[in-house]
Image (spheres, rainbow, N blue to C red):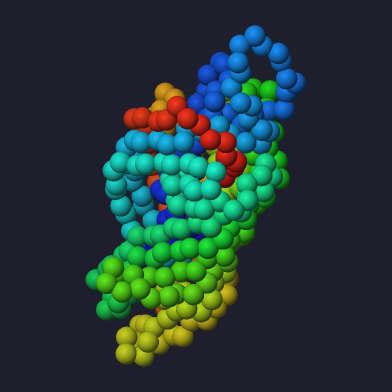
Length: 316
């Protein structure tokens, strides 16, 4: 099972969302750039509505195609590889309250230059037990779905002399998790996620953006049991019975880069280092490694977008 986020394979959807909003590099100002605080200048021609400081002007909707490749693992502490390639159309919709795309589906409750609160929905990929892996003979891990509130605080959003921006933020989220095989739904408890993020847009005036993020997760026993428990009926000589408990699930360090060869084409790549040492259920026979490295790469091509624009806080 791959969960998004923060298990080691959240890279593709996070990159598709986080890097979809990166700013293309041109000599003149772009509508997708965060508005700096500048004195008003009188003009004989009607001006477009000013974008408040700390906000970004984005198209209300976008339609395009995207694809990527992901190499990761089934769950935090797993050594079983989970590799996927994907290519499909995407739709992005933005309103002051509802956002589809840009990393998921979310309803925005509060949006200010330094604070954003929303309720978001997410999910993850399923996995199957390898014939020679530690989960051989155990039930397969189903798709996971998550829903819950998240608060994001912007510590820094500063324009740079080269035309780029530095953005630093912190976030806290509380999510309810459920698994499904699409014939039934089973609750897997609640998790808490805490993160710090940094974005450097248009590095040295170029078309490159850089991202970094550190996430740590705590979860109640039902999610840990889903990953790490071994019922007595599934115990073997090399896989003793184990009853998982609640607590620390793991930490991940994510580093990513994006490049825009044209304003509507985005290329991206990212790497995630899973740091799971000290996890609550490190003693489980299903916990194989305290560290794991995942990566993803892909593209997104916007084919059409609206002329109408909305103002949003765009800090990852």
